[in-house]
Image 1 (cartoon, rainbow, N blue to C red):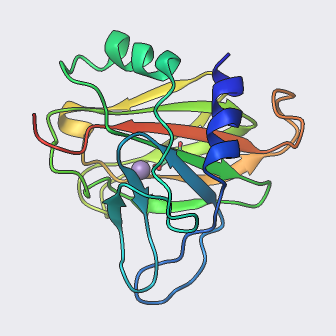
Image 2 (image 1 turned 60 degrees about the vertical axis):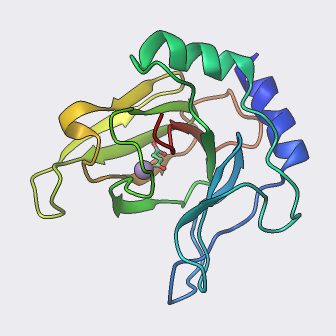
Amino acid sequence: MLLGAVRCVIATAPLYRPTMPRTGKPFSVTMTNCGGLGWVSDKDGGYRYQATHPVTGRPWPPIPPVLLALWDALSGYPAPPEACLVNVYGADAKLGSHADTDELEFAAPVLSVSLGDVATFHVGGTRRSDPKVRMRLHSGDVVILGGASRRAYHGIDRIHPGTSDLLAEGGRINLTLRRVMLR
Ligand code: SIN
Ligand code: MN
């Protein structure tokens, strides 16, 4: 059910490849979003949230009810997320260490769901130089960065190809639910 809903989101709001602020270097991950706001990045505009898809110019599709129910059950936050970032990782994709700081609301956690191949995830402290722990995220795993870890540095070191048969095309999908605006 969740995967079907994600496929519908991607059919409406196609995956695209963001670029890094200033350098314009392409991400190895492709992305799209659902929700009233979506997280985007490009050379000229940098990291930001916006209400429309940067390629189609259309509003993002709504967040599927199954994800809103997961947020209600696990977030401990009394309002819904406005943003769900969909990250798609091929066999060689990575996501460099970063903290999620483009939101206005930090009282809400960031909640992410992994689908498909296993990934090596790292999480550290609020300074880039803080020690990191590494763990393997499997399909169906949920990570919540909340409280003291809300602004923790985290990233994806590598994908382990062939470790799940959920996605016919292989690779991994990660869904990140975020509250952007203050209540
Ligand atoms: C992210 O930090 O945007 C995604 C993390 C993940 O893929 O697990
Ligand atoms: Mn993140």
